[in-house]
Image 1 (spheres, rainbow, N blue to C red):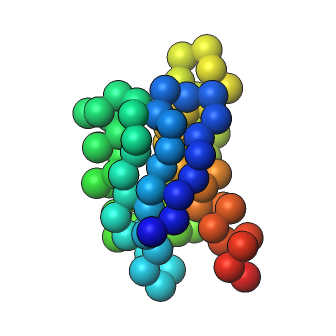
Image 2: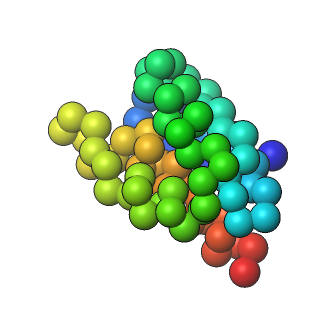
Length: 83
């Protein structure tokens, strides 16, 4: 299980698993429960690169980031550290 400390959003942390090149289980700690559960279920089983491409750059209101954007950053960090 990988852990990513979020920045600039309501959730404090994202816990996730990678299975081969696919996103496995995703769990947000904190944040808007319904939205974070929805994002988690939608990306589970998705190719890591596809998930990054779809989530990257999403903003939450006036914030420059969002929980989905933070997940894209977590996945990018995972990829960089496992090359």
